[in-house]
View 1: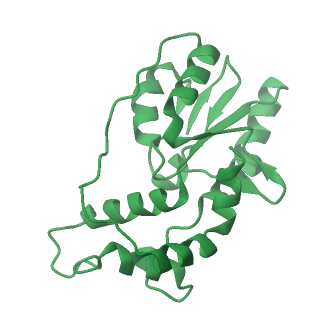
View 2: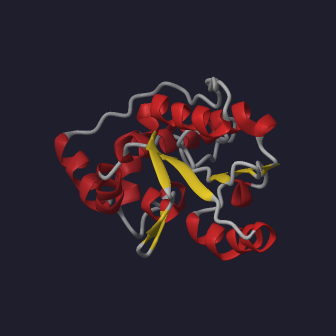
Length: 194
């Protein structure tokens, strides 16, 4: 999470949606940069509304604009899979050993599936009941996001490529993708509004 005090702007770091690159580029410009622990770095909209926004408002008397990135839902799950693969590749008991992406996607779709595939949903991060983050940008349209930031922060922005996961097969057959689309319906509905 990044807070730009003078610009009344808060970047909420959606997991697996480019947050490390954004924080690497913008941390020097932010008044507050929360990068650790992950629970604070990735504070969702509910947490922001409950804990952080009241404090900001009490000090400034003003509302801060919230912004975030959202990744295409299946691409987001693919990113989680690649990330989890590298979590602990040296551990012979690592839960990802022998687990291909189709199996990971099946585990994600199963409410009783293994913990390794419990990664939540972007809609849960970006919304709270009828409330949603003020400006959500598609990860796949990083240019629109950087233009917004350049206008709002009044400086040129160049996002580095960091935290790049390994290249692996992340293919699904039509039936597997159809199941994921049903399970991720809220994410797809939100993504389609962007």
